[in-house]
Length: 175
Image 1: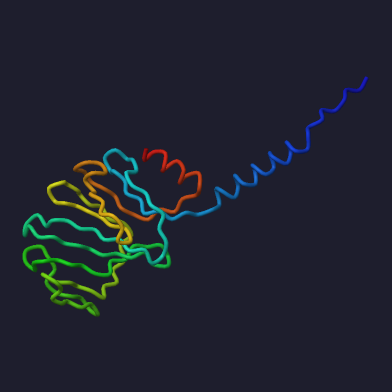
Image 2: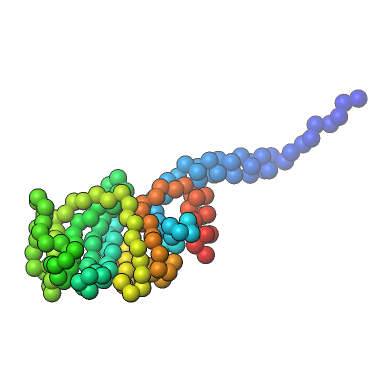
């Protein structure tokens, strides 16, 4: 005696196939993030989608001269971080004093600026401490206190390429 074949409703087949296709597409879709990780705890503390042309400024209070320094970076077409200028109010111990080839050293506002820089930096490791007022802005948006993200610790700042499920996982770990 023959058994009747199991009849699967066609809409369920369509739903399963659609979900499989969407899952495959989601893992192939690249998202570029500015990712900041707490090195000690090996966990993300900040993530934001970025695109070429985005501007990042990172500032701190210089520990020796007790003056503010701001490094200005941009995201290039290959999603790499590039230092484009540095602002500082003093030019003494441990601070810039001259420009390299093609760069411009100038008096700027209440201090100095080196501009026309084109210094790629694949990643930044920065010790942050509330007393050094480590801050960051992304596209001139609100100022983020870096020490408020993970306390006084070593942070790793870099661009990361992830897929949609990885992005969702990172966002979940941030909450």
